[in-house]
Structure formats: structure tokens, C-alpha cells
Image (cartoon, rainbow, N blue to C red; front, side, top):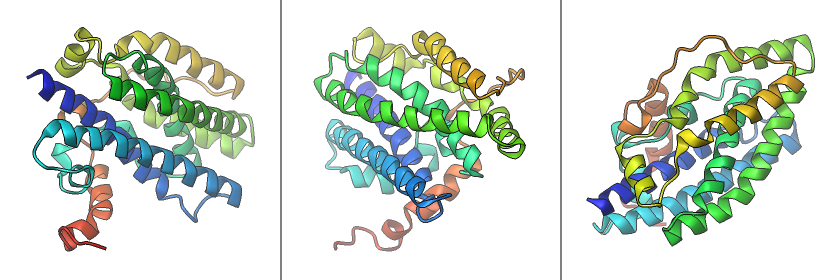
Length: 251
């Protein structure tokens, strides 16, 4: 049972990185200018690299001869356990940057804690990831300030994105049975314990950007239990098309 919990814990972290990486990769050749196009592509590659490490580890824990590719391309929507925020559509550039800022702020704190994991593999992945998330957060937070304190139009779009995506942020700090089990074994992270520091990061950046936290307290969750928005199904249909059309094809 303990190993099954670890498998599901690692798998969920891999799903988070995979789905967000896929979302950002959709900006390739569509960025507002060349430098930003390259930046978004590089961040998505960082996330794919993280996803690969985590899904490879999950495949080993599963012990059924599966691979990272099997876990990425041969599961259906209800079998994915990523946070709902990561699957939200790119929308306009402000939507993407707000989504990224919320998640970057979380992952920088999360992976800092995960470096202390008793699981050597997870600790090593976290040590690599914390370097990347530090850059990711610096990139997205600067864009939030630039958009919020820019033109009237950019400010309005940034505030609208914050208002629309805020409902998905509370899920980042929820703890389920798997999380609690991993925490008890000193393997996982107490996500609820990093909420206050996350709030501080968000408040400081939004203040400088002249943007406001939403007053609406409505929240939604369920991603860890395989309950997703319609957007994940559409994303998977694109991401898994080749593998579904040509099962086990070799290059």
C-alpha cells in the first residue's frame, strides 16, 4: 500500500508538469515577439524534462513493464491527476502569464520543501527543479508587473485573468489521503503549510502591478481525483494523437 501511495504521488507530480508543459508548448511560433517565443518554449522544455523524470520514476514504481511514454500517452482523461489550473486554456498572453505566475509561485515553494524528502529520487528531482522554478517565477512575475502596470488594456486583461483563474488556486494547497501518507513518511510536502508564503508572493507582485486579489471566494478542485474540466480532454486528444493512431510505433 505504501508503495502504491508513492506511485500515485509521483504520478500526480509528473502529470502536473506534463500538462502544463503541453499547454506552454502551444505558444511555439505564436509568442508576442521572438525572445518571448523562445522563453516560453524553453520553459515548456523544462517542464517536459521534469515530467519525464517523474513519469520514469512512476513507471519503475508501477512494476508492470510500463514506461514514461505509456503513462503519458496511454491513459485517458480520468486517469490523469494533474491540478485543474495547469490544464486551463492559454487564452490571451495575460491568461497564460497569470496561470504561470500562480503555478510558478507554488512550485518554487513546493520543490524547496521537497528537497528535504527522505526519498532520494524525489529529492534529486526537486533539487534540479528548484533551479528552473526560480527562473520561471522571475519571468512570470515580471510579466505580471509589466502587464498590470502597463496600458489600460493590458491591465484589464491581467485583472480579468486573475479573476477567472483564482478559483483554481485553492486546490494547490489541499491535502488528500495520499499527500498525508507521504507527509507522515517524510517523503512528501505539507502543501497547506506553504499557503501563507504563497499569499505573500502573490500580494507583493500584485501590489506592484496595481492589480487586486479577487474577492470571490468560490473554489473548485478534483484534479487529483481525476475530475477535470473539458479542456483536458481536448489537450490529450492533440498530445496523444500519434500514439493512439499508431500504437507502439518505432522511429
